[in-house]
Image (tube, rainbow, N blue to C red; front, side):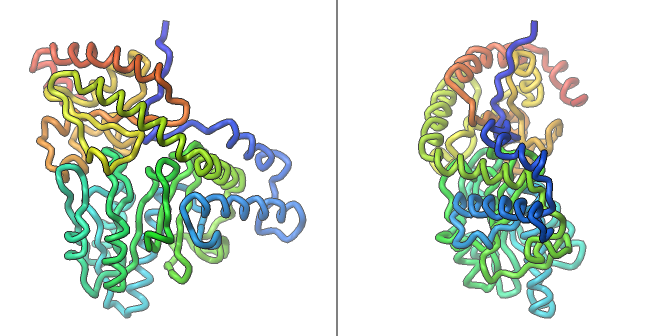
Length: 397
C-alpha cells in the first residue's frame, strides 16, 4: 500500500487553490474572447485582465496597475527585465552603458541571460555573498560604475530563503543611473512587498509559486522605465507581444488577492510550523541549517547532512510519501552542488548533502510530525551504507 503523499516542496511549485480554479473556469468555457477584440465578448475578457492587473499591483505595492505586465512565467519576467533593460540602455546611451551586474546566487533564468549578454559584448560583473547567503549592499555598490545598465539581485533566494537588502542596492543603482531588477518569485505572497517604497524599477513574480496555475507570471515595470521587448507585439501596451492568457491571468489575480488578504496570518502560521520543523531536524547528528537565521522567508528551511547525498535522501523520503527537494526544481537531478551553496562557501560534502523543505497552503502540524518521525530513520539508513556504495550511487545519479 502506498504511503499518503505529504507535499513539502512549495518552493518548487504550489497547488492551485479551489478559489483560484473557480475564478478561472468561466474563461476556459464561455468567456473565451480575445481581450484585444472590440466586441462585447472580447471586452469582457479585457475587463477580467485589467481586474487581475489591479490585484497583482495591490500585492506587490505598485503605484499604478498599468505598471504590471503579464508574462508566461517568472523566468520570462526575469529575462524580459534584464535583457530588455540592458538592450534599451545600450541603445539610448549609444553603447556607453554595456555593463550588467548581478549576484552569484541568482535564478538560472538570470544567469542564462547574463551569459547571452556576455557573448554579445556586454560586460558582466557578479557580486558575492557571505556564508549566510546575504549579498552586501556596500559590495554591490562597489561593483557599479557609470557604464552599468542594469543590476539584478533577487529579493529572496529560492534555495535557502535568505532575504537581500534590495532597497539599499536599488538606491546604489539609481545613483549610477542604472535600472534595478529584483526577482521576487519566492517572496511574493509570503512576506509584504512594496515595489514603490523600495525604489525598484523592475520586479518579477510567478503564478505557480503562489497557488495560481503554471504558465503565467508578471513583471512590474516602474512608470517611465523603457525596455526593449523580448517578445514583440502590440499587446500589453507594446511591452510584451502575444495574446494574454486570460484564464491564467485571472487565476494569478485571484491568487494575489487571496495572498494579500491572508498574508499576515498565513506567514505567522508557516513560521511556527517551520520553526518546529527546524528544531526537530536539529536533533539529528551532523546536520547544518543553511541561510540567515532571521533575514529569511517564513516557510522555507534548508539543511545539509554530513556524509549523505541529498538526492538519495530525497528518493528515500519519496518512498515514505514526502515531496521535498535537494535544490531548485529547475536543476533537479543534478549531481554537482548548487551554485548558491558554492557561492556561500559551503564545503563540497555539505553542499552535496543538502535538503530543502518548504511549506505552504495546506501544510499542517501532521505533515511536520510525520516528516520528523520519518527523517531520522532515513538519514541513519543512508549513513549505514558502505562508503563504496554511496560513491557508486552518487556517480550514477
